[in-house]
Length: 161
Image (cartoon, rainbow, N blue to C red):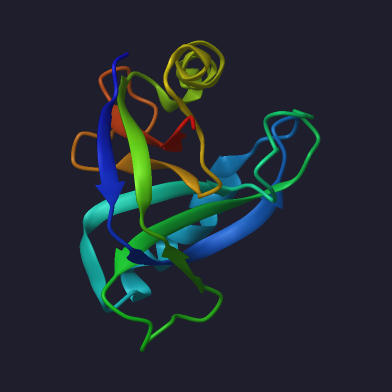
């Protein structure tokens, strides 16, 4: 897996979030809540969906604890926050540099890709994690838990100084 690098422009997202940890990782619950209400978003931009992780601090992975809580999001991009469906919350993705990896396979098997990125690729690169949300961008080629599914894994990075 070789990344491309992109500077993400700020984006407005709207969706659901919940606290979870890797020891009891259950994003399907979040998506089951979000998807039936996605049609209530009147100002949606495009068809991409965002599966985000907002970690509480920059050292989350330096002192990794599988029971440490973070905020998981199921969201879509919107043009503005003038109409926010009940129960949904806004999240602004700030501008930042991202290493973008294309992952092909079942979403349930993506753990190995994340382990490669964080434990193998990142330590050997000239980058370190930046304290911005991590996310998977699920576009037209995403097919839930299908082995032919494709998604992009966006990891916030900055050059090591």
